Image (cartoon, rainbow, N blue to C red):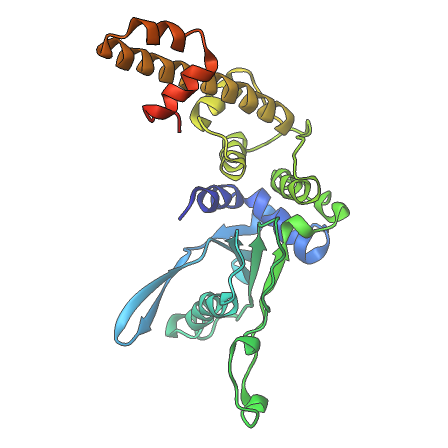
Length: 289
């Protein structure tokens, strides 16, 4: 599991973020699902294949409840690259929840639907695969009338309309806006909207954008009370420059130690006064990566 997957789940587990995602993507921004009636559910389920038990894990899942009655189970699956077999994966997750509803202890309880939203976070290319299980199968024409299809709900976040992205009210809008801008302009300019889940957003955006030294950035962000994306990226850029200077100073110090051991004073002087020569030596001694 990579850093992007982990940090996406950390943010989406918050009820306000989860409800916002469902309301915007399924109900065009209408507040149909209230965050206060969402209940966490285990994301793991067991599957028996060839006599062996295999575990399968959803990314995030919550029950939408009315009193003690389940109205639906919503699941979120994050994808940074398209997966051709996603319909088969989703039917496994959904099927496990439907199977639970026919167990003896649940037999006479109200039955509820299972709805999975696949959130595609890639911005360089569209999700190119079919959302239909039937399209994955090689089915004899005589059998087609009897083969049930299963279609998945894929949402390409970076390819949503600007108006749709602006419907998000939670911190998820920061991520959607970042993906949209990267797709359309290949750059990102953060706004000054307040962030509620600061640590989770900073860790997620660091994973998405590749910023290093994220722990230090988060620490300074708290010290300076940075609470918006514009301030975070300015801080990340500042700390990135500082980190680059520190790494550069460390390389030069290491080079000086090597040259001192060789006892060549002329090399040391030239390496500290001639940038081109210094870079040649850094490459020669494999200090410059």
